[in-house]
Image (tube, rainbow, N blue to C red; front, side, top):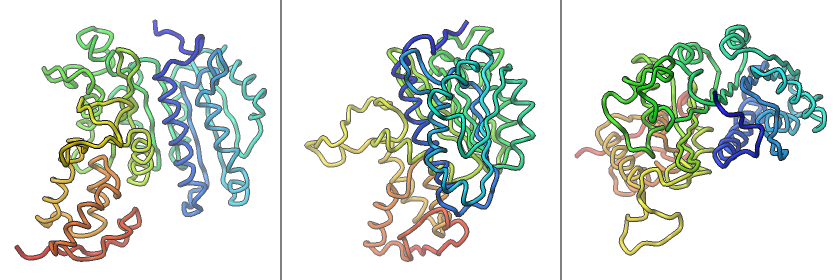
Length: 363
């Protein structure tokens, strides 16, 4: 039986997860509400493992973070006429009752939103709510305690939702530790996840996300990104998923804000011993290998003519888990050396709609 995380103070992994959730929720709402550029008027947030809203020390959980972010945008939401619905579900009725009290005490029951509460099994409530996700911009939080609810079947149901960004919590090292147990095999294809190989323990969440990537059919545009979290000897992780590159960009901005060296973990996931801001004796030793590989491959793709315009560049960079600020170093160097020409400034999401050509000099 999974332990109840709310009957004691949140541990460091939960706090790290909530910090990422908080930052991403603000960024996500900034796209759909704050920017004024998105015409979708129905916005729905689903927190389907919501808990009571706080730990036993009063540390805020995801329900409070969601509603506080919405309240800060009340004027914009009201003026623009957005319809915002927030759905809270927990399998334990006592936690929903406690959540209602917590929200009332925090003056969050009223705001620029309608609140919906349920106390049902996740599979049942997701099946009931999915039709309401078809005509709105959705943020789906699956803060499961364990691994059993993010099955291949549920992933397929989520993946086919338009304008839906998803954040899933996964107890990654638990999957590795008990990969041969029937309890794991009932919900996850452990033999496919690990394929006869045992990944480095500290990189296990990467391996799990690669498994979910393998479930996306060729030609289907669906983007995944991991963020690993260490808690003592355990490795947990966030899986981000979206059909939209703007959503991926916002998640990556959040991840790189938390991990300025690799944008992927709250610890040294590649065991390189690099400390941010610390100078080294030899040039390049302060640059993670992940970044070195990206820069080399990005340059090759450019010079081989595989990225002929700014839209293709934006698409490629984000799908590698990087931001345009990381690609800019390569672009500036190649343009300075006369190897490419074209407008390399201001490459962003709009470049997908209005790409500008990037020409490669003859070799």
